[in-house]
Image (tube, rainbow, N blue to C red):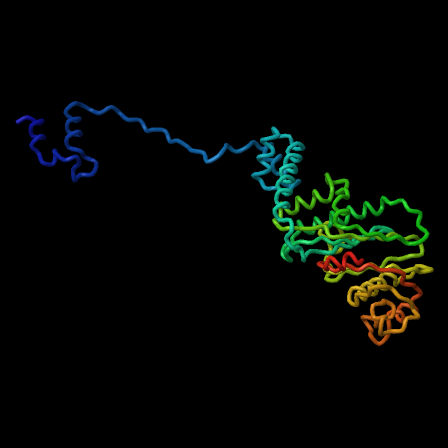
Length: 338
């Protein structure tokens, strides 16, 4: 009997596989009869990439530089560089434009939501002092570094406005800016646009409604001193003379000579204004109690209620002439009254 006929009669040969692993009787035996199989060379392995090939070292350096400079995500920075053909300056401008569009869009959606939290910012430079209030929805966002940077930008913008007023001072000058006036101030030499543009950017990044509530500024000539106090104070991480907190006060004093304790005295007077919330200065002749309870000089001194504030100040050789008090989240009526 021939080999081919034997295979046809074999029950194993009629199946596709054999108990011996890898041996297929029909095809493999037929192949043996026909001659050796041609040699099979190993197939090359294919490497699949999930994304584009890694950028060159110089492109990586540009990406890192743009990321550090702008603070935007790596994805957005890479897209900006690709869009602008690797031009760093154009990529930065493109990022700001996109963020601005997104910020204004988000600001429009969040408009009207209540903003009772936030921070007071107090900044002093030379003979000028400013007090600003920026509000947000939650205390969680108020503790965020990006929000604090917004408060810093508002304080700097207000300071530049104050210093640009070329008054010949014979006495102190004081001014207030409401929300709309504050929003139109230039953002400063290192930022483009106005403060409302910086506000939109912050809203876009943090996802909460925010408002530039108000600002006050004071300029004094020689012979005057501005005491200041911020309750729960914390210093700005990037501007040493900016102090942040929930309450802030400026107290304007007139003095005939500079005294070593003026800074401490000004801080104590500011503490009193924050704690006792007077509505006017009053005079040393005011009797305590009755209708004078809201007059600063006739109020019991916060740190020693056995005497009035006037009795504390008089021996110090200074005269209190004015003050400003900000409380974060005060009602609109109180802000308008000021």
